[in-house]
Length: 296
Image 1 (spheres, rainbow, N blue to C red):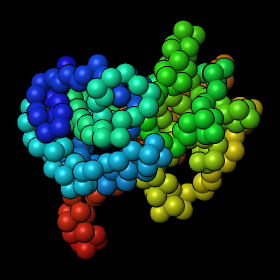
Image 2: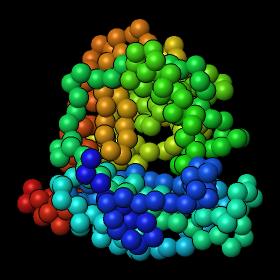
Image 3: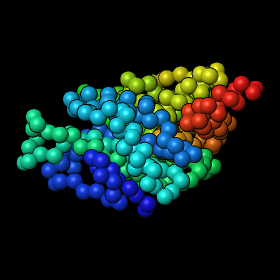
Image 4: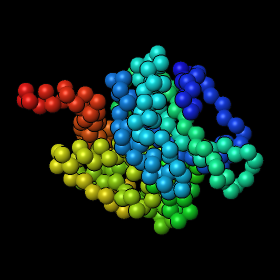
């Protein structure tokens, strides 16, 4: 794999952290995943804003400015020899001098940026994903809020492994009330009777950045949409379903448990995909987008 790392400003092909690093020992860290599009990072301000929200939830300090993090990201990205990249930004609480659950008062956070190669062109799958409704429940917000993107991902890992053991590619996690939340690394959407529906934040989800941009598109084009509390039985009347995430963008769903979706990818999914690529191009090349609008 083509890979670059930047650990506290030092760029190398790989990086090592101490065995006393709290992110390694306890998952005591927050992170964001950004992708490039047409060679430029996309949605970075939104990701950095969420990074700081997650850190605040963990009572963790992020001492670097957004400008510094962006500068280090771009400096690392400039050394990549490939066209499109996956970018992971990790902030850990720091490295201890001894093993202790209690964080030391003088800890200095670590900043890690990982850049790796991804497919040069985003593609909407025409086969779709097989999902199951997993038995493992989403972490309750009273224990560890799903709204914070932390390094503690064991709940999601176990759900994903259990889905794969059952021959599926991903799992839909329910909350303690038996309501649909999201997949293991993606927000979940369905289309029922022409209305695009997705679980609300209070169901127990991480509010995705791609979800944010898709919501903008839905409202701009006045496509009926709603945040809805969904139960598993609501999924059996869906005409379309898809997942959204920052790297894969949108992934159509062809099957949930034994239910075969009538459309995959459906017409609304295909429309949103095309508009998302347009929006991304306008975001990274705003001057060109304004010029095109003026010509029209």
